[in-house]
Image 1 (cartoon, rainbow, N blue to C red):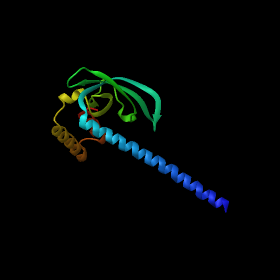
Image 2: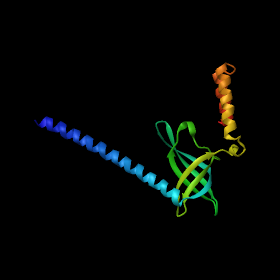
Image 3: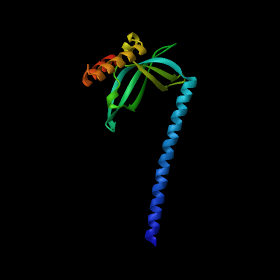
Image 4: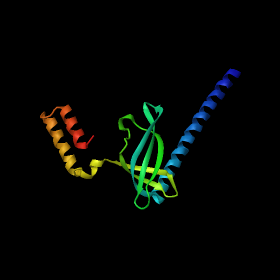
Length: 162
């Protein structure tokens, strides 16, 4: 009889541990959403440029953890530096010189969110509709056999600037 109770108690402990970590994860997710909502309400917009990258030597699922330092130029005021340490997908690693929009808390510049990446070529890029139509035309050429799949992919990468 004691063996049966031990099995039941073991399962209850396992369920309790899983529930604890699940609710802890949910709470951290809620806090992150609240932080981003707060940034959306009180945040100040600035233009950010990556000025330094340091690999921490850690990785998760083969994605490296990198400390990224941004130089933020607010719409009004003096530029400042702020950093974050995060895991980045190996296929989309940040680079020194990458530009993006940054929203930050004016009372705590370490509390910030990052908007979309902007490439230096984005200012001179063609309108999105023209880009889409050019890719669609290339896809039609591929479908008709005028381009191979590899040629189409190379052309698409060139058009997208990657």
